[in-house]
Amino acid sequence: MDDTLPGKSEVTKEGTVHDMTSAGGPHEVTAAHVGRRLEKVMPDELPAHNGTPDVEDVPEGVMRHPDVLVIAWTDLNVKGSVDPRTAVAAVGIVSRSNPDNDWVGRLRDHPLLGIPVHAVFAPVPDGAGQGAGAR
Image (cartoon, rainbow, N blue to C red; front, top):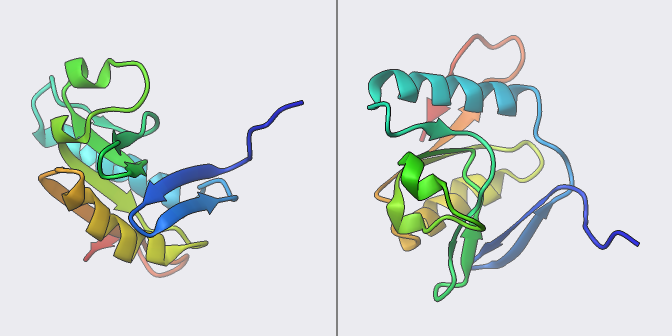
């Protein structure tokens, strides 16, 4: 029997956050746009990575999954979670299903993890124009 749950889980200072829904639509489009824009201005050795792995600080008890992670290729090329102190920046895209996880949790946890630059972007609702807003 498969013991895995659908969706994605993160461990925050407040406890475990489990998002049962898959990110899609505006969330994924915003992450792709942010990643592409960052890569245009970053050196080749610093990709703006969308996807796995997680960043984890075991002593802090925090494991996060940034939507975009700027990190050196050598620091990304590890088994398991990435050491968050090797990240250059992390970007979270606000999810429609649990926006407080992004607006509150990420803005609290990314600095705790030692990520020096962190941002949260909100996809613009359908019909409201293009782009994303930073907070």
